[in-house]
Image 1: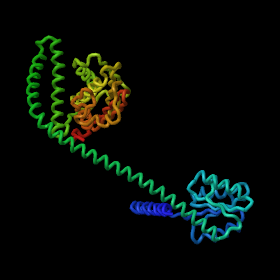
Image 2 (image 1 turned 120 degrees about the horizontal axis):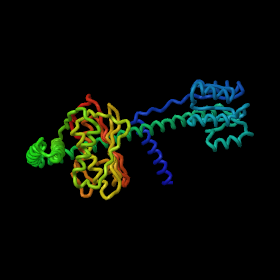
Image 3 (image 1 turned 120 degrees about the vertical axis):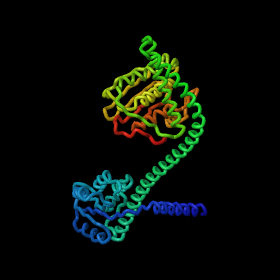
Image 4 (image 1 turned 90 degrees about the vertical axis):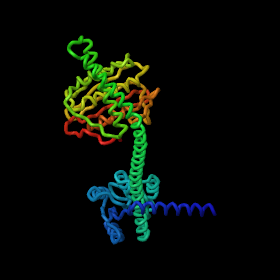
Length: 422
């Protein structure tokens, strides 16, 4: 006895909880009052219509075919009351047709005692909600209609509530993700503050040394030097200039400053050749093959910051090379797009990343390599992409390699300053 009472109390509590949740969501109970009455006997139709029309919106039809025409013209009904025995189409056949197109419609059938067997089968199969035996009582028919419309409204209310709940869950999840992002930015700001203190003096000293080395390489590029020496000095100058940019970016990260770019027309193929040349200068890149593929359509000219873009593509190649260590295959480098926007694509068949690593790979100071790197490469690439009005897209799977698309807005009108890292 006690168990039954507790179960009953639990159901009451659950019902109240659902009602309170629906009230908080401001979901109103839908109005269900559209009824279709179908019978080939006009007198029966008139009696049922008179019984229900004061309380509901009643539509009528004298056959199954006409009933389907009414639904096609007036739209789905909340409830259908039909006689079983009708020419051409029985009541069960009609309700099955209606159930296919409008399963939410409540279906009631009126039948004689001799037709009970097929009606029971239809009820068991879900085609019919309820049946009434002839001669039926007006009060019984009115009660069946009210119960059916209440069920229809309750089902619709449940669907509306579930739909609203799904939206609220999505909004709640988006809020949590935004809060997590804000928290990560605060943590990153602390790291940047520490990094700024450490790097300010170091980068100052390195810049002084680089300035001296640039002076020497500039002297070696003079006309009185052998061509071979001048070529080596030219490559060394490009490498030193890239190092200058990298140090500036480290300081930008440390101070949470924007990344300024200076757009200018640059030849696409020249950019790729120069980047590959810088890539192969590093001794650790021996044995790493890079295939430069010209995909169609490929813009002949990019309106971008050549130094920044070269640095970003070089970082992508370096990442790919690190992922390729000990594996056979080649890195592919290509550019595809138009005069308005394009993608610089770097693909490898290296270690790849799982979803958790892929989600964090652009975070500053995050590295999944062994031994770990400084963790600034992809972060700087993402910053360069944003500074060009674009984005960084990464596809990867463990053991399946990685494809990175550096999407760029190839237009002079795009803003050339990213205000903050994020």
